[in-house]
Every structure is written in C-alpha cells, then in structure tokens.
Amino acid sequence: MLINKVRFDGQTFLLAPDQDVDALKTAIVTAVREGSDFVDFATVGHGTISLLVTSSLPVRFQVIERTEEQLQLLEAEPPPFDEDAWIEHGF
Image 1 (spheres, rainbow, N blue to C red):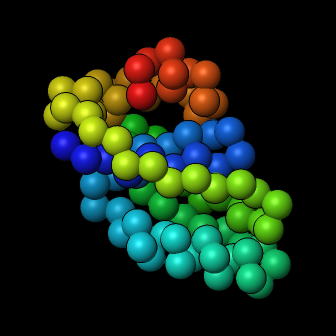
Image 2: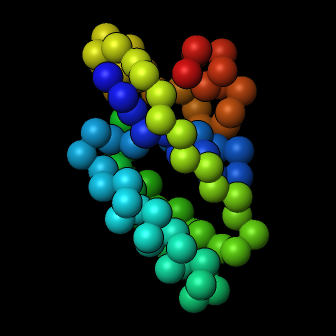
C-alpha cells in the first residue's frame, strides 16, 4: 500500500489514506504566500493535526510503501513525531 509521508521541520507524519495530498500542498503554498497560516491535515495514528505554516518551515513529501499490518500498528501505537522515532520504527 502506498502511503504519503510529510515532514515539517523535523516532525514526520503519515497522512491518512483519504487525505487529499494535492489540496494539502496547495494549502501549504497559500499559507506561505500569505505570510503564515494554520493548515489542517489528517494523519495515521495522530488524528487531525493543525500546523502553523510559515515561509521558513521546511516541508517534504514522500511516498512510501507499507503493509496493511504496519499501518494498523501505527494507528494503534503511533511513534512520536520526531524523525529519529520514525527511523527506529522502520518508517
């Protein structure tokens, strides 16, 4: 299963399968162009996140492949947001 992963300034999130990635990218660009704004997005294991996006906030999108079992584990026991925790969990 292909999953969208986004990293904001060292914090990593797996996007919920029903999250519209193109709409999220557009919302991020709009927030940057307007100076800053909160952008909401749905995640696996952490619910909906509301993040203040500014022009100095690095953002990276990545598509990864994970099994359904791995996603269920992340939903039940999500790791912390920092990048090191995701690496330790193999994501």
